Length: 413
Image (cartoon, rainbow, N blue to C red; front, top):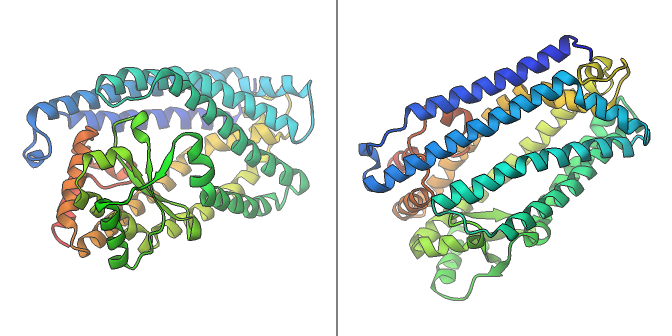
């Protein structure tokens, strides 16, 4: 194992990232209290608030445990050069420019999935079940895990194979070609997501004729938004938590409502939630997000090109020889890119929160501010959401403003 400068940079990134996460977690813990804050009156009852705090503490402790395990394991893997060892062993089986990276990343993905599964199982059947959220059976849990494993292997394999192929074709311009192909692939996945991927895990049934459908259709007419597809997702077979979203675009555009949302909210509140989602569409937030994602993918691929042919990257990952390696270079890049990715994610979160305010304002302009607030209160309270996170945590991690921030903003629309 050759401990070069790049190796120690990667070690430092892993340690600093873990330390920063723990600082954010500690800041959130400092805001916890069994006493109901005055601003939460009417959202949480004192007894329910105490339960919410217990839920947040349980999640916080579990997140620290899983993060510590992952970080220690990562450091051990890096110190012993496990990635380089695995790559060397696989070279005895094949040196094909496509098969070798596919085998390498396939094994790594399988190991990570198996190591994560006990944590996912504990989270689902201990924490989520203890607080009344889990509705999933153990059979469904493992079926979901298997489907997720196969789906990710398929889609991830396509991405790895595409990048490896274009890198083999031209090491200089591969990132530009791969950028164009992966952009088309990403758009295609999003376009057919609801028709091809969602049915693997959930049933989607058209919303029945009735008062709710009539109210939603009337909202669409008022907002100048054509509603043709409204579906109900059977989310209650896994969790009691509620949500609603748009998926697809163009003729494939559809509205999806969790069945739990229909049980938890009044018709006016569901209409307000849908108005918020229409606001996202009318303000072109989906398109903006897609364009930003495409731009960031291009930047990432361009930066990656400097690592894939780097002997230093291969050595840092445990290669016994100072020879360039596509697979080891890709691993090294993903680790070095972590702080850049984190900062880009913060920028995305800032923009996302701004978009949430704009979508709320759209619903308010439709005369739905009050039912939107009452609906959000119910969703947050039932999910035992943390309504008083530390401001730095909100800035750094939250894609949505807190409920209290949204209520304050709606009051001034």
